[in-house]
Length: 310
Image 1: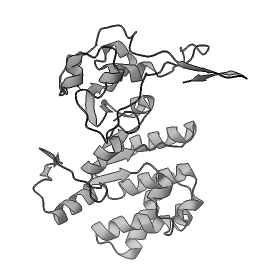
Image 2 (image 1 turned 120 degrees about the vertical axis):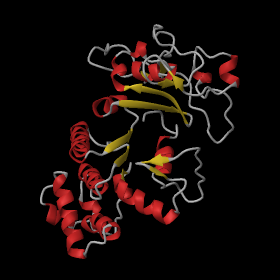
Image 3 (image 1 turned 90 degrees about the vertical axis):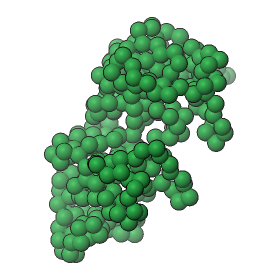
């Protein structure tokens, strides 16, 4: 799942995991997971099902882990609470989980506090925590945030390996389409709280085959080895809408060069598209040249120098 900040990615996935903030109202016409209709389950039963079948890798590893508890203690809570394991067995499971994610000296590391871990180690500890209950689904919310490229690659490889070995599915949230292209088979593009396109990840290599103008603009704005390093990077003009205000019509309409009166008045629903996925757009642009979607880079001229805003 990809989209700009504030598009609703994390909110949607926390709602799936029943981890929405206190006071939030979550409604759905249909909510099924692994054969269960979650809308019909009593809260206690649903908590048990989701606690063992869904693992979550939170966005900020430093705040996701309790700074007052040792890492091993936090991992051991899952088998102790859900599997009713004894203290020794749960601690052994925690050490094994840290070892599975390639953390050196897992027994010693299990006795340490989160602040004694590096950012990459904390992220791997969160992956270990998400896997220790052998879930059917892993929700990874920006699992590579604030990590350097080499650590990011290791985290993605680890997440892919864990899914392959356990058979779990994964939903990965990211701002970076390139990260998702390495890991996922499908891309859900979210804008202004709605899914605007559901597409096979392989189409990202050919932006002209994508249908929604926003998806095409995201893909086209990514630099690659063939990008002219002399020219400023392409940008999407405008700003995302304020979701605290009522939104009428397509949320991308104010930034879209193809928008019409219909786009500004009526919200499009996702429908099946020829590329094999779905798109929510009144004027899908697949097969149309990409020019005209992206805006020109902004250039700020100062008294000392000129700065390109990318």
